[in-house]
Image (cartoon, rainbow, N blue to C red):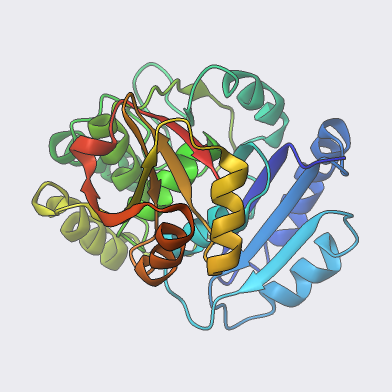
Length: 310
């Protein structure tokens, strides 16, 4: 049977919280079907036993992929790696502790039938109540800052529970530049400019202690990253092809060129194969095989298209 859902779990120094997360996720995997659901675990350069414990917990699953970044690059980089290799048409990103109740995954998958992006939202009556007043105040201030710089109307941009259609996820991953925790805000910024349809899903959650987020230093870096979003010129290499090109045809050419993590942005007059920023060499191979044109494209040309994964 083919994989229908990919669950991406980024983790950094999470050895003490993995058992709790696995125990919460396990019954949901049974419900979704272990042979049609893959778990992609990305150890983001941990210096503890995160990957060892992950192998002990997830290693027996029939469909799993466990990888480790050579060094700590950031949550955004880890998620993008997972998206690049995901096989499911539905992609769900979830934190390693599964603080957001994973029993809500089936509902998220249902919403992904009609919406390209389904972010989880912990908001109740317009607020998110954390385990301390300081975190609640900081979270509210950060939300206002994200809204100011990204233009998003969503309140809970930092919820670690998000669903994507795979084509949309591939496009956002290829375009994204932020490696750290502010990658979530960048996703919503790009989604707004690309006019991607999003439908928030209200979730229940437990505020699990032991997070690797450092309120001071991480918040300052997130602020710097978000402040420069509007000044960033988002352009990627693309291969321009005819509107009706078959996905299988492009997939064969991409395999021959040894490049992956691609998406097709299909418009009214053409189809653009969107490559990662370091994928121009592979793009040359695709262009030569399919008689296409290698060039760059920005957000304006990529919006209002249908997105398919390769």
